[in-house]
Length: 302
Picture 1 (cartoon, rainbow, N blue to C red):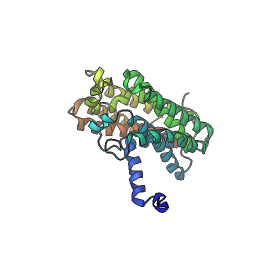
Picture 2: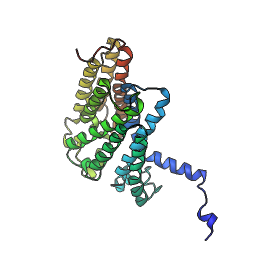
Picture 3: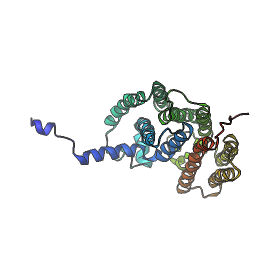
Picture 4: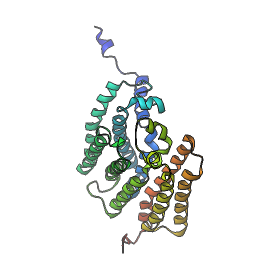
């Protein structure tokens, strides 16, 4: 045996290949998870320093990687049909390697979280438990209500951990942070099916019962109604000025309208989902607006 050949150092191209493989696991969820939750954490904590922002983004991304690897090893054949650039269908990593990697990521996420606080570790553990419920216990393929609730709880766990990482106090969330996370969970529970319209054919093929499949006649209208009502409510909760409120409510109405009035194609629904995430990121940034203008510490409820 050639000792030097056996223990040859990893080359830069191999490192780049590995890092890009990790990125591909999470690529489709950057816009749906990393960006909106970063906005919420920075706004609701609030962000203690601009230098803390990379910590927030990395904490979210690493936990997203843990979730996505767990999700993508369940049914690689589905991705082979719909998302061929992902690591498993493109043969960048084997199923057995991905399975081992999925479980190795859990202690890595926990160790990173503990570096910030025990409370951040609790958020990480909760997210891992919800990942198992969603994937291994197949909540993703059950009734749309169960799927939406588990999704909302998962996003809330992301947000709690990211907010602890972002803020001055890594052990306690204040009133604004708690309210913003609760509202976000409500938004996800009632609007997360905005992502399902573009995946109807693939979901139907594997027997998944999403709202666009179960309630096709009203599913698109639920997005318009939910986004409009949430926009009106958030404008009041976060005490937006007349100009800001008008702009935010108009954005919610226009995004919801896209789902109804634009041609119902995969490409059109993908663009509508991009705009949904623009609205979602704006909604998550509103607690920061409240903190910025609330110089007299006016309570949220009078």
